[in-house]
Image (cartoon, rainbow, N blue to C red):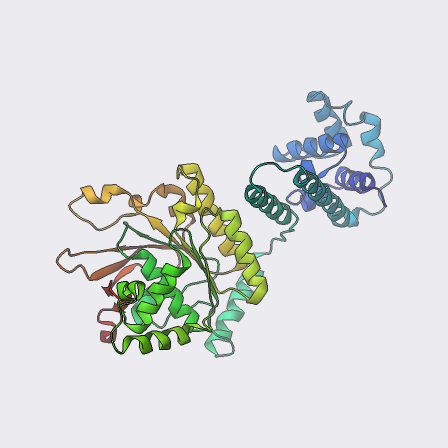
Length: 423
């Protein structure tokens, strides 16, 4: 078969002959993948019948097309009957489906190429839109093969025994911070971790603190900053490592020993596997492309996004935040890495006597709560001790909840677990 129409006809014919064939391709092929308009209508009729539990064969499909007044467009009853007569091999339906899907992908790419030849306006917008469309093409081309529960449990059992017997290392990313690792169990691949706080509490500083520790332990990370510049980030990291106050690094007013301290701090960061991306106005599709690029370049252990609402539309509407939340969870699952996303909390918390955050304080919280595997808050529990922050885990899908107290020295952006040695 050299003609795409032949592969389309083979798929349809196999599905008309053997119901199991439609089951094999239903999650993979969409109506839009068929080039022939008539074939699209036939496949749509099959899908409609299947969705209501009706059998799929040449008779039922013909009747469904009559009901929808699409039989003539589909080629007529005789054409549908003829589809069942010349199928090389029903067993090869997945091969035919792959050929149909690839042909559809080529058409989409060709259409994108044509569109790019006639772009108007800002090229950056065209590039961003094209990247999103390319990701959609790639995603729709992936075939997912479901496995039995026994296959899943066998894989988990083997991995657990291998970790127990020291044959492999745990897959969770451990920070080495006693209480943080105990409560979180380490940061797990495919998890979406939300850290929420009101402005200026220290959520960006805390995420940099975690990123630095993980990178020091050999985990390559991508820190996407939608708010701070890379220079601001570098200044904060140098302050935390050297102990030189943040403002003094900015202004260049250094004490006698501080240039040497800064030099030593810089040298420690030279080979740290932490990539900083500070491009503003990025969408979740942009972030996905960059995460995949870093994975291809040298592997990627974790991703941090500062912060979630800035990756949504300017209005930060519920729909936009929902899209970003789902997109970040998708990145975590697709790349099998923990994704840490920072989130703003609503102003309602300021109007309560208790400043302890709740899940409902997350801005546009519904979808975030649903997608996140772990949700934690940073807040100051006692205004008399403004250098003490509480890291409060309020939702943990795969572990315990609890809290950890930190000393946070704002001048140097340093964190320290309070009472970590008491465990």
